[in-house]
Image (cartoon, rainbow, N blue to C red; front, side, top):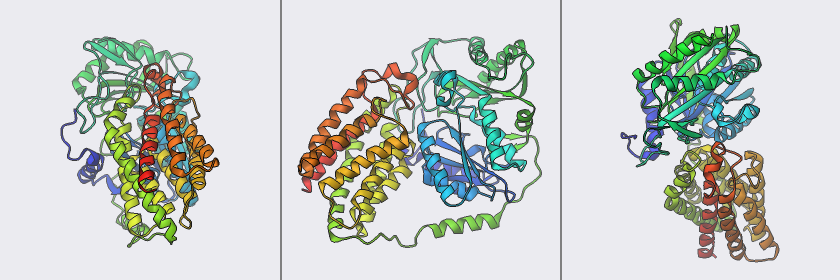
Length: 583
């Protein structure tokens, strides 16, 4: 378990603060993460990576010459927000464009995609690439749905080495695509990980058993087998990966491969070496030439007891990039000439970030009617934060059945931050629309992950609909919820039946619109819609997930409602109480 922490909610920020203090030779802190402390040649493509905390040395430990130019760091097991990613990428940009790289998880895809849009709006040419190497999370015919695990490293490194050679953005992206298409990973675990402040792991493995095909966010494996010997574990990993070769590799004989035997947190290095001796022998027997193998902790999952094996099938170009030198806090290879810090650029970045934050917070002008409506909005957000806090443990347990168990933690962070930001804006005299949009930004920024992006979208849609000029009536609120429903489906890609929050949001929005069309008062209309939401959330227990981290464990979730759907239903009922109190 994780023993050393202060406030669990501050763990990620405090860990990053300590990391930067320990590694000033390589990195310097910026809002949202870290960037290189050394100068980047003008015009060089900036490779910016990122993901949640809890995976060190990924992602901050991989920043430095020969590897990433910057890393956006989210909360524990939660993707960084679009604002964090935008901040890091802006600081890392050297004039050659930005390639954003991350593991293929829904929250990362959403937030990095939004950050790319913001960078493009700033005039920064930007591309994105999601690593999808975990063969246990989807079959070959659905490889685009696979998770990113320890294969992040060779794919990140290939792209970064190409950037160091001065290649333009499109060519760096093609290198990433080539490396990603030739990278496969598979893992096993003997116990789950425990998040800071938690008193139990996200999943457990029975005595003398192992989980097969795990994820790095505490997701349980796709199956269980008897606990193996080291040689048996090596054979399982190697044989599983050799069954699926890249399309242009007909036979492993005579092929070269970069090999990573990765420890997930609490498997000791000596144990890894015992396994690797057999991995190397088995690959040799198959005719594979191993190139610069890595044995150690490269992508971890807190204290998870587990290992994963990654093979990147090399051609001449990928081998050159894999062998290229790198100098980062956690990954070093070859030799590079000494580099000097870039104090001018650091000062310029700091000044730019300072000026990006107003010295005194200001809010748009609002009518008295909208300010009065903001009172109700603030009360509703307070009710949201309180109901989430009261049910956070329950939400985590539901999420852990087939996912990573962090839904309650993320919702608590997001709702608390949203209420705090809304209270600040309300204190400055903001109208209802501004109170909601400030809350939206705070929720997305502090929660991260898929739920952070989606709840940010919901609150922003409502804020836009309500505005700051008039007193919002029931029809306008219903229109805002309807737009929120459509926006969430556009952003996340889920539809009714996928076992997500959409299974509640759509019927809730439809019921609210129908009730307001009957000229019911908002409190009555919301009550009817909240009842619909509760029933819809319960109905998700009978669905199989078709999206997100729960999809590989679909059967396990039968009989359990979706955590996001359940939390949304709880929130709609809590908001109804706030509406009654302010009627």
